[in-house]
Image (cartoon, rainbow, N blue to C red; front, side, top):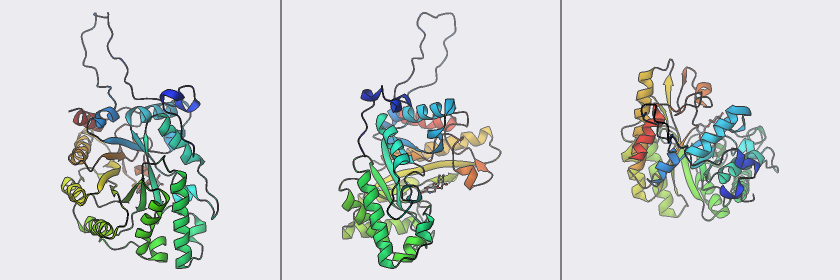
Amino acid sequence: MRRAPACAASVLTALAVLGCGGGSPDVSSPGQTQNPPVVAADTTPLRVYASHHNLLIGAAIDRGFRLTGTDGSTFRSIMSKQFGILTPENDMKFDHLHPARDTYRFVSADSLVTFAESNGMRVRGHNLVWHSQLPAWVTSGTWTTTDAQQLMVDHITNVVSHYRGHVMEWDVVNEALADDGSLRPGFWADHIGRSYVEAAFRAARAADPTVGLFYNDYNIEGLGPKSDSVYAMVKDFLSRGVPITGVGFESHFVLNGVPSTLAANIARFAALGVKVHITELDVRIQAPTTPAALQTQAQNYRDVVSACTSSPACDVLVMWGFTDKDSWIPGTFPGWGDALIYDSLYQPKPAYTAIQSLLSS
Ligand code: XIL
C-alpha cells in the first residue's frame, strides 16, 4: 500500500479530519478571577506520558472506528489523541483479508493503517496464522499437508508484503498451544503438525526482513505450564535460528485475576533477549459493576502497566479496545463487561486515571 502523509502534512485530507490528535486543550482561563480555583483533570494524553517510559500505549480498533455522527467522531478523536499504536481487532484476520484462494481484500484494513499513519500511530498486525476466524473455503476444503503448507506460506507472503513498511510487528502465530502446553488442535496443527509454527515465522521473515515477529497467546501471562511451553519454544527457536522477536501476552484478565508472577514472567523472557508485549489487555467485571469494582479494576490496570514498565523488553502495551461501548467481552462472556478504561459514554474511568498517574510519575 502507499504510505500516507504525516499528520501535519495531511490536515487538508479527509482522513486527518477524523482526528489528528496529540495535543491537550488549554484548561486555564486568564482574566476570569471570580471562580475559586479548581483542580483541573490532567488532559495530557496517555501516549505522551507513555513515551517518557519508552512505551507505546495503544488500543484495538474495530466497529467504533466506522460509526457515523458524534459517536464516531468522539471514538476516532480519543483514539488518535490518546494512543500511539493500534491493532485492528478483526480486519487483518484471515477471513477478512483472504475471502477466496486467489482473492485478497485489503481495503478495510488499509483504512485503519491510513488512519494510524495520519495520526502518527504505529500498527500491530494481528494475525497471520490462527485456528479461528478462518473462511469456510479453508476449513471445508480438502488439503494435503503440502497444500496446507503452501496455503499458509502464500497467505503470509502476500499479507506481510502488502504491509511491509506499514506494520511494526506481526502476531505471526496466534494461540497455538493448549493450557497444558501441548500443541493445540486446529486447522493448521491438524493438517501440517507442529512444524507449522516455525514455518510461519520463517515465511514472515522472508517477506519482510525487519518487521517484528511475535508469538501471541493467552494464559501465558504468569508462570505456569503454558508459559513454560512458550518459553521452551522461544529458547529452541533462538538456538536454531528460527526468527522470532518476541512474545505477546494477550492479558484478558478477570477482575483481580492479574497473575502475581507477571513481572517475573516478563523478566525471564526478557533474559532470553526477546520482547514481551502486552497485546490485548482488558479486565472484565461480573455484573453488576460497583464503584468498588471499578477501583479494584483501576488497581489491576495499574499493576499490569507497572509490571510492563519494569522491563525494557515490554515497550508496547495494547488494550483490547478503549471504550466499554465497543468491547468483545459482553458478547463472548455473558454476564461480564465494563472491561476497558473508558465507559460507554466515552468518559475516562478510574482505570484511566490510574494508568495516567502511574505513567506521569
Ligand atoms: C476477538 C474479537 O475481539 C472479536 O470481535 C471477534 O469476534 C473474535 O475475536 N484472542 C485474540 C483476538 O487473539 O483476536 C480475539 O479477538 C480475542 C481473543
